[in-house]
Image 1 (cartoon, one colour):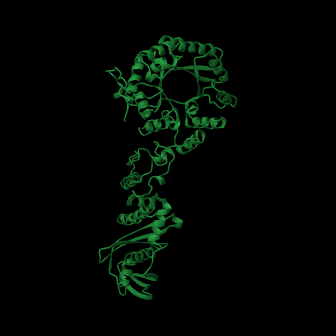
Image 2 (cartoon, helix red, strand yellow):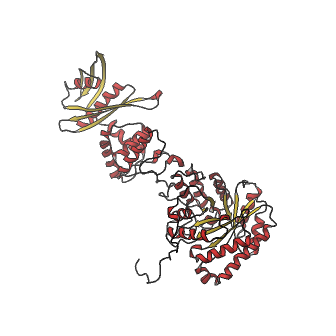
Image 3 (tube, helix red, strand yellow):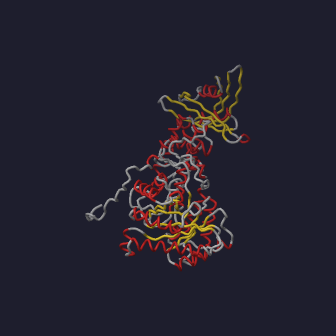
Length: 552
């Protein structure tokens, strides 16, 4: 970057943790998940959600399987307060779900928060105050002791109102802007909070360590989490929670490394909605675990529904390349990628091993409710294998491999001209135009076939140069007999190089499809296709198609 003053930016200090253990650890189970879509996500929207949208998103979160949901900041506005009351009054909170509410350490705000919680069986009161060096120096102008006093005042107030609440209250404390806070101070204020609360094995406390602003590489955040885990009192009764933002674009990595470092819980949002560059995306985290054989405990088997609801409620669009869920993430345009995917899917179909092993696809699209139809799409970068895949997958044409280059060139000439992606029906139209709707210099009228002791006899009627011709021929099969009949009057020399056939469609309406490759004196190789209810007729149609394509 040009013209940046020297000293304006400086490297984040490394953590003194020479015996760190997290690099050797492995994630083996899912963390406790807490969605903050309705609070942190909502406050970052241009148009915050109204009641109906909040209710719709809450229902989605329950369907996905979240057991902890931060529903808002009920003391901050009427709609936040009324939303929580609506959940209670309409009995929309399942017994196994814990509602979480955010509040600052002020008595009138905490009193209003507990008023909103009346009737809630299980609730986490999320208390926070900013502890970072910059916030203390610039915003609050308070000492460390004053910041601790503020946090403890909040704990005392929560305990005061807890006594009057008919339900279970859990405490979560966040030293907000943790990543900008000295570790010794973060540990000190957290330990003071848990002590004042009265932490025990029956009164556990969530200590949330947010990367409110992502300030360093993910390994530094992992070091911070491991350092805190070693220096928190009553660690066995502390639930260490992460809440990462994506300012550096590495929130997913930071969260995963934090789990290696001992974090127990993750706060995040669906599709990474949140302040500035967003919160960590729980969908990405959960599906990352799925690809490693770990049960994420969350259900993303219908990712399209998730996207539809989130986009409708947030009025935000999902990037086409968003991990796992974007419109194009399971789509290959590159010819070599298409070929590898096609072969991978065919290998899997033929294999008895359930292990997912398909090049370029880290997860089975069907596991998130996507279909295979959109995996391969055709543009000017695509190859012959992708075209063949679409014709087979969508329309049942199993083109011989030797024919792939021919059809690939025909499609590429169209994509080069149009300069855009072709839909499956566009590719079928190209096939029809070049194999079924071609100009004919020789036209099949009729034929009869007989077979005696393995020899086929063909009486062929066709029009050539405006004249109807009847010719007879015999050979070792219908195609060979037809060829020999043609050679008596047809002036163009050719040989048959290859032949293939298959049925197309379900059993009751199946048609025969035949492919014939011919070679001419000029060494030209050309394919023809024939389709008919009868395989012999389809084969002869394919031969006439090849002749018309080669010599017209």
